[in-house]
Length: 156
Image 1 (cartoon, helix red, strand yellow):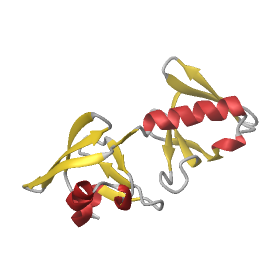
Image 2 (cartoon, rainbow, N blue to C red; image 1 turned 45 degrees about the vertical axis):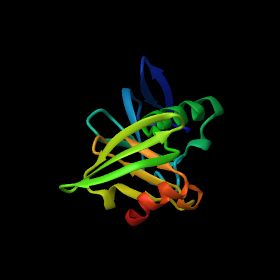
Image 3 (tube, rainbow, N blue to C red; image 1 turned 30 degrees about the vertical axis):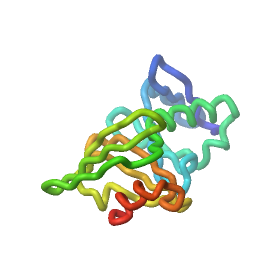
Image 4 (cartoon, one colour; image 1 turned 180 degrees about the horizontal axis):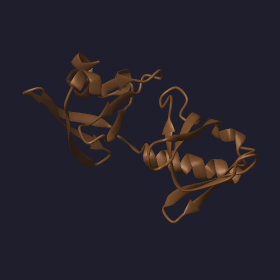
């Protein structure tokens, strides 16, 4: 936080470094090193060529306004759709085809390697990543309705 000044540059996050070496990066991206365990700690800052500029130890080390901007950027990059139930799961030729609900809306998505596309977070939440890298969460299996739990239990 002493040598990094983040700002908005249109739709992008920009970075100016100060101190011994001064640099301007008009566009940087943030990548979580530990997305499940520490979503706002150990954040890699990369330039457009995916070269690492540095690591943010903890977003909370930055001034409040800057920390909010970094959190917003991370939430945008790591957007997750919260599912409330699973309507159907169909396996075919190494893919699984899912239909689920997010509140009253129905969504469909496909998983390529189902067992590696589903992870259970330390808090019990089920995390799903589809073939297009979209992310979904389901509440822990114990909190799902009986039908949804039965449909996903063989994948956990």
